[in-house]
Image 1 (cartoon, rainbow, N blue to C red):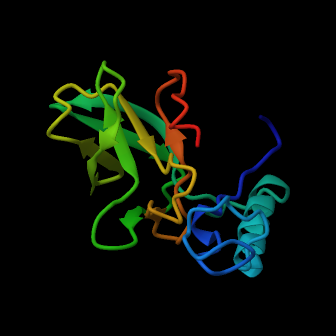
Image 2: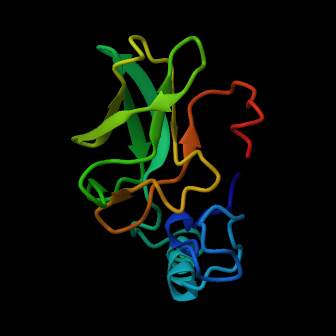
Length: 166
C-alpha cells in the first residue's frame, strides 16, 4: 500500500516469563512488548524514510521472489542493506514444500545476497515459508547487517490447514 511502512518486531516479543503470559513461551504474542525503545527506533527509521525521504536502511530483508535451483529454492530479498546475516550459528525458521504441499523444516544458508533453502525429503520444492509459525519466540534469525530482522513471509497462496493457523 502506498505511503505506509512496517516495522518488524518479531524478535522483540516478550520471552517466556516476561510480560503477562506464562513461562511456557507458547502463549499468545503480547502486543505490548517490554522492549519499547527498540520498537520506537524501528518505527522512527521507517518514518525517516517514508516521511522525510532520507536514504537510510529502514527495514530488514523483505521477500521479493524465489526460484527452484538444483533441488533447492533460491530466495531473493529487497531491503538487504549492506548484506544478509544470521544471528546465531545457522539460519532458522525456513520451511519448504513440494507439490504435495507438506512443509518440512529446511536447511537454509546465506549465499551472497540470497538464501538457498532445501531439504533432503523435498526433491522438487515449489514453496517456502519463513517465520511462519505464530509462536516463534523467535525461531527465526535472518537479519541485514544493520541489525533489522527479515519480515516473515510465505511464497505460496495455498489455503492454510487448521494446524498452520494456530
